[in-house]
Amino acid sequence: MAVASDLLRPMKIQGNIRTDVNQLEEPMEVLDTIKEQVEEHDILLYMKGSPDQPQCGFSAQASQALMACGEKFAFVDILSNPDIRANLPTFSNWPTFPQLFVKGELVGGCDIIVEMHQSGELQPLIKEAVESNND
Image (cartoon, rainbow, N blue to C red; front, side):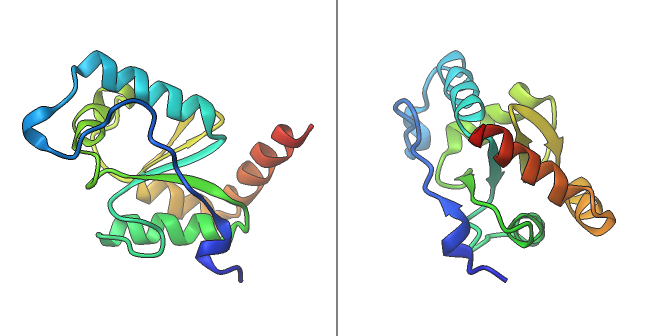
């Protein structure tokens, strides 16, 4: 099994996302930032913490399932990005975290990610996303 740090692609936060809750960006700016992130990264996990140090059990399960696929993926720590945490549910129409996007489409949250991993559906989806990017 690959080490988590070998699979992670550092996430460059686009725009001026602030961690000071008292200085939040305008919601439309944040939604534009989220859209850019989702479009820029073929595999993107919005989670609490990082895959190496998840800050909740659901994020831990989701990132472990992704890492088991053996491909690099980007992530955003929503706890360090309160603007994104506040606005991502509006963007995705999905109320909970973590949230996995593959090729710009929402796959789902922890339950769906884990279920797809257990059924063998997640790895082909991830591999296809990576291979289509290499063509």
